[in-house]
Image (cartoon, rainbow, N blue to C red):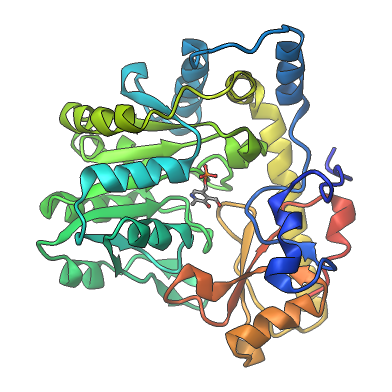
Length: 375
Ligand SMILES: Cc1ncc(COP(=O)(O)O)c(C=O)c1O
């Protein structure tokens, strides 16, 4: 099923179109953006085709059945209870994140991120004139954990929000219930609101615990951002959800949400979203097997070559966090090292503190494309 995938080079795929700009050449296999070079599953494509049979694309609202499909999925797969009245449509998790920052903090406030982490977190904070408060993860031989001591010491009256990446991009952690409970207790104690970005929650190789499922009290202090985009490769359709259980926060959010008017998404995205959450289970199982096979194959390659590059098998995501520190290259030279191997990766430094000497590689490719990844 995942032997080959469609050629994306002529389809406006950002991963391909920005190669010259980012890598100085088009002659690289793009393994940077976190979408998959794996075809969107047929049950999603079929739902879109069916919708296309209806020859009219006037205004639509996001159907209740689509929200219900996500509610059912999240309950069944993650034990998270969502309620329709707490859910908002958003075209992307980053839109939701920026709007949450604007709603729940003021200019000059501090927002915690746990680096190395998805670079758009810091950008979103800075673009909204807030201050990034880095609480770097602790690393030990490739294993990453939260640094609660550092977190507790850094929190001050200006600290308002914590953006949690769960599961974590790029280090691939699925945070345990115990880790999340400790994090929650610190946030509750200091009245810090948690924005839980759980976009990668379905691409997990072990059990994911939604932050808002930890307790009712914690759910009341959490904004959960969810999306089928990564899992079913539909980022280009621009659809996701924002979930806010706390009544006061929801009212506050609704004001800003209405003030910018995001609309209710597009007709094709609605049916794709619903189909993904309704029919996705069996395909997702197969996808995970494929991803693990790709990961194992790359591990084997590094072993056979006695490479100085190392990585820990991720607990989630199709992203490999390559530890290249033993190559002793400056970050710019390190990026060039991979470009010379015709590979376009994401430099570790774009993920903040803790990223120097690392590169992130997207392993979500077909079996055929995998053969071109030679580290
Ligand atoms: C943790 C995380 N959040 C958000 C996004 C972007 O999501 P969206 O395209 O829905 O804005 C990504 C994409 O890589 C991501 O890894």
